[in-house]
Image (tube, rainbow, N blue to C red; front, side, top):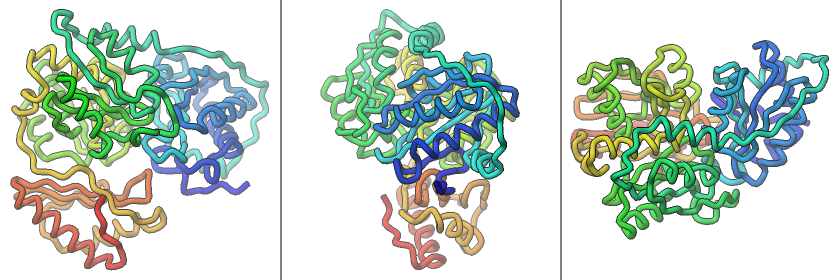
Amino acid sequence: MEITESIFREYDIRGTYPNQINEEVVKKIAAAISVKCLEEKVTEICIGRDGRLSGKSLLDALSEGLLEYGINVINIDLVTTPLLYYAAKKSESKSGVMITGSHNPKNYNGIKLVINDKPVSGNEILNLIKNKKNISTSPGKIISKDIRKEYISEVTKNIETNKDKKIKVVIDCGNGAAGCIAPELFNSIGCDVIELYSEVDGNFPNHHPDPGKTENLKDLIEEVKRSNADLGLAFDGDGDRVGLITNKGEIIFPDKILMMFSEDILLSQRGSIIFDVKCSNALPEIIKNLGGNPIMSPTGHFHIKNGIKKHNPLLAGEMSGHIFFNDKWYGFDDGHYSGARIIELIWKKNESISAINDKLPKLFSTPELNIDVTDETKFKIIEDFSSQCLLEGEKITIDGLRMNFDNGWGLLRASNTTPKLVLRFEGDSMDSLNKIKNDFLNELSRICPDIDINLV
């Protein structure tokens, strides 16, 4: 069968089931992964899946394909992506494959993979499929393993807890895979846990599991206020991203979460902190003022992970809610561990999360905004905008076009996972914010008049 090449993204593989991704396609991907494994002298790999409806059959197809090409399989079954990364870190091969559609609509699925402790792009897998090599080897062996107790035990030892101060936390798993780990984890570190939508259900009957969109946080905000909780935590479909609600029901964007963690970590250690192009200008200022080294990265866990390999930072993160702790954890993006570190911060400071947030710079910024386009046109739009934009300011082109002005900044980039343009704006006042946003959108209309500029 023909493979849809657009599913092979810059930093993972993602598409609709069963039209673009199905069992037959996954077996071809498994063959390519096997070639990559053998090139890296890897003979064993961990595999897992999130709670999507197509996950089990795709995981079975992946397992069959890997075994057929002589790769031994450790099947950890229904898990979050962080649990798969953890299992890979703990294995001799440092390799893992996760079947996940992340925060995409329910009819999507995909693959994230790490081989020999390094991320592998979807593009590399596509090239391996095109240049098919025949492997002659005896079939691999399979074992099943439950990694959850080991993970919970290690996180509990890693976090500085305070048994005298019980923290009440509302966790919203959005019916995603985090439901299989988060409630037990937060109980284990000594929290009073109120659960929302912990039952894993690939139909996502309550709201979509994407904490990056404010409309998905309404139920969490209501429950935090109703139960007088200390905080609320929301996880995406595969648990590698976190959203944060204060005790007052306010949303804290991930760049402000990174500011909190940067302040905490840099007080005791010196080093680099990586953040993506969507983050506030206040973040690198805080890092520099505390003696750290701020490093801006293109968006995407593939880029951040390569940056972690290159710079060995203490911390890394993205505006989407992926946070990578590398100070006393393993350097992969982990939504539930990030939540545990937020709770540790409340214990250490003995302050409410809203009080901690109030001490940070006041930002006038938008959440991530999107414009619907097509996968075929999005990169050309960015190319045209970057070359023809007449706005005056400092141009940063590591990922789309980010322009820094005296009174704020604006960003336009192409999503690597969906057929969308991604925009974000920040100003030193609401007036500055609105002016920068309007200037950007007017330029986009001038350069690309065919685009329907409908921000969502």
